[in-house]
Length: 149
Image (cartoon, rainbow, N blue to C red):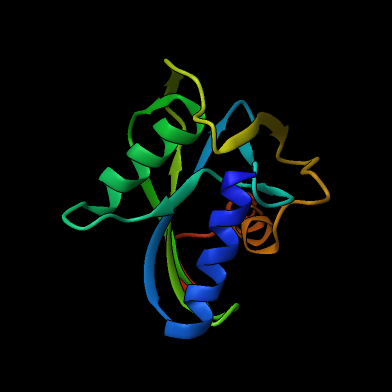
């Protein structure tokens, strides 16, 4: 419940101040399966990720968010692309990485309701659209690019 209230407050903040934010997402893929998270405060499935903190590099943010949301330590990261989301009164820039080498060394934090691996050919129906589009690009062999989330 706490995270739902916090998320609602964030949406009010976005409406009032129209922030520009930078975030990261990581496609954690092994054996043609992608690891996705379901949050406690929003419906649907997402690639692990979140906001970049002040003084943090993009790859540091991706590693921190993956550790917090999945309990995994990431190996080599590769850039898929950078995408912009202009919905809900904000401007979000999402940098998406791909990681094939990772190991689960901990547990997800309390923000995460569920962590699950899905076949790349059988993604969940309630996977958020931007995440689905990025996974489809990955499956088609797309290289680093940019566009709308």
